[in-house]
Image 1 (cartoon, rainbow, N blue to C red):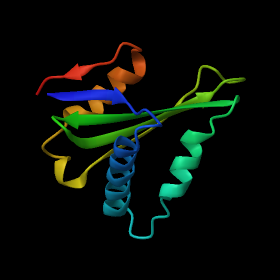
Image 2: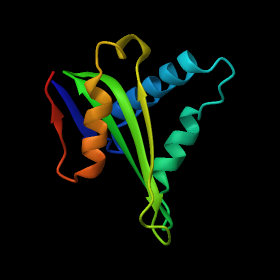
Image 3: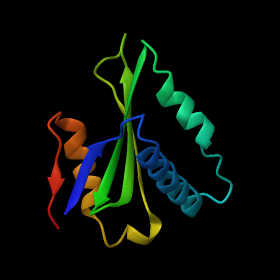
Image 4: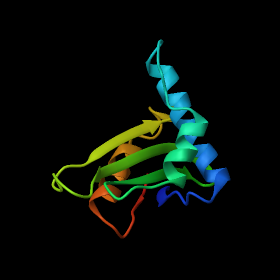
Length: 117
């Protein structure tokens, strides 16, 4: 079962797994990618601001992080809009089509979501 959970910025192990999954996905899709660095990700979650809220999510299959989502939106204007960037490990994409669906359900629901296979 794919389980979606929010990343605690203080949990460096999960944050690192988020970053590594994001990197694997970006580099698999874009030959000349310029993904965010580990230092940039840490800075972003360590210093949130009053204008933009960012929520990082991970999709786990057991203990393994198989996907990530970066959900964000303005806190001051255009409150009806949101950004959602989803990454799934390249080797899991065909095996885990429910990851995308689970992230979308999570983004719509503050209660969390589990997606059965």
